[in-house]
Length: 350
Image (cartoon, rainbow, N blue to C red):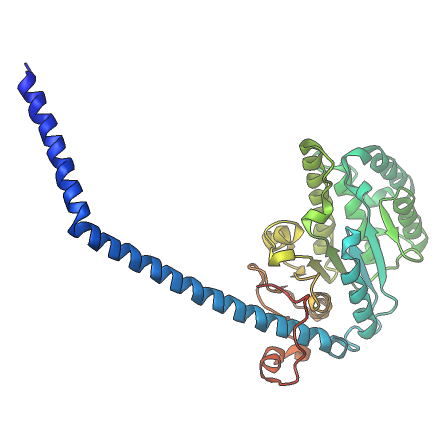
């Protein structure tokens, strides 16, 4: 049986251990441990300063290259798409500055009257289900062949309608659509405010650029969490259906996304770059930067020549620029030339 003497010895041992720890910690161990910690802190501080310096240097070089490329844009793309027809699609008005620059560059590239198509919120918004259902009924009455006879239960009305757009733009002769039927189908989409088209109904095209806004631009701050989630899911469904159909048709296609803060961790760009099902589509980031629109057009040029890739400066980009004869040596020129324009305030981030 354990008696009082055992407890007394145990307590004395504990207090002796505490006393020895205090003495050692206040003496030689404290000095040694303090020196080690101080050294580690100083080393971390030095590494942080080095990384900050490297980041600033890379950012300056990137700004320099971006401005250099943007200034050379018209010359780089001149007549590279001569005689071709191109459609530029977008999902939000915030992309307007980038799209206007893309349209200018397409003109320089010799594109025959590039057409702009705005995808409108009714194509994916939760409160527009009835509008989409009416549009599908109209399409079935005009050209039922463009819709699946027995649609998969997982295919939403947003997915079905979004997939019609690439079919109308591809000009596939096997779908049995005459120019008159195509015009009628475009009118259905326009009348139901699912898309907005500048000018007449778009013809069949030789390539497309899909300019996507930053995810925060596509959100509605006034919606509650449930509705916002439904909207985001509907948007992603519409985007992936649209781009999946472009991939299937083989039409040269580029996804160009705005990436504020050089961040591509959310939005359609992440989806396309992370899914092998979109491997035939090229992607570019930096739409909001001076060189972003040019990256889009250069990527489309590469697409029409049978190549593809992921370009820009975000972490999942493969290369800075498409490897074209027109772009060969640009990075070296930007670094070596004394006449390179100085970076603007709108330069990219690294």
